[in-house]
Length: 442
Image (cartoon, rainbow, N blue to C red; front, top):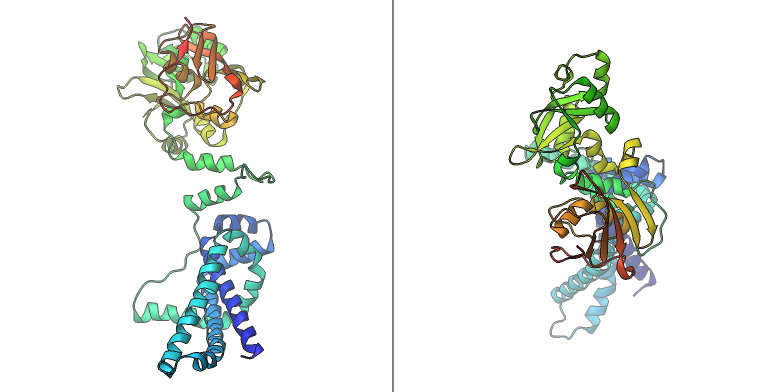
């Protein structure tokens, strides 16, 4: 066995492993991440983004390179194994066929382990990172092999189009929700590892992915908080409703709140109308089970910004604005009215004063709580579910390890502010899916 034969086998196996690993990395990499990074002018990502547009040529170059290295490997491996097997096999089985058979088996096993299974397993651990590290050397190999690749790819296209009469198209990559989900997973920092803050907040992308599953009832203003006037009320009452609420739109109903006829905009008061109904604009009505993304599309298509939500019985369930829908993606959009209405104060590590309107998933996410979620969305809804009655001011409701103290009630039926305390410093209590038993003082 000559030294050059051993070196030839080792180099061939290393190159074959690189080609195989790069191929699986190219298929599995976060292509959206590569595309976004390429826009910043980084050379490795720019090269890989170019190869994404020419994916058939790049993969063909990898296959050609891998094939050539395997042929070289086979030649050198045969030169090494042939004399070894011929000298060591028993005479009863020592013939050309058996020597060739054993050469094939041994060579194949070595290739499968060192140039297929092992490199592909390694490259799958972090395909995007490894792909960008190998972008420069692989681009050099790509351009060296490009003449052969060009002939091979175009010959294949000719066979597909002219002989087999099949359609062939090579579209540029189109990114979907799967690519976005993979990108979010890659840029989200690991809780157990120290890392720099990502340039783009992954929570926005996560919210965008979850947005498709959100119903309008999850982002609506409930019926009890609707500000409305009767269509036969005088304009003085309408003007006072605008002043007291601070809203730019006030709903108008006929007889009762379940018969909403539209809404009035504060700017319409400058038209000096004689009656409320003369400046009432029709309102969109949608069921509370409607997906929020469909309502957002409807808002944009019809140039509307507010919709009435009705329940399964046709009664008014609440209202939702385009701001409420957008907040499901980008988080709370604070304005001067939100600051007054939404109380959120942390007294210390285990005591908080909160508005009952805060959503449970928001509190769980921000404070790492695990408050249960059932048929309610807000902190007030959870307390009503636990208490099974409208609580009184200063009433204490126990749901270990949480203690809810009712600080204020509005309109005798709506919880306004709550003090939340966590007993024994248990900031991450065990989650209870179906809360049923609570202790409460009279």
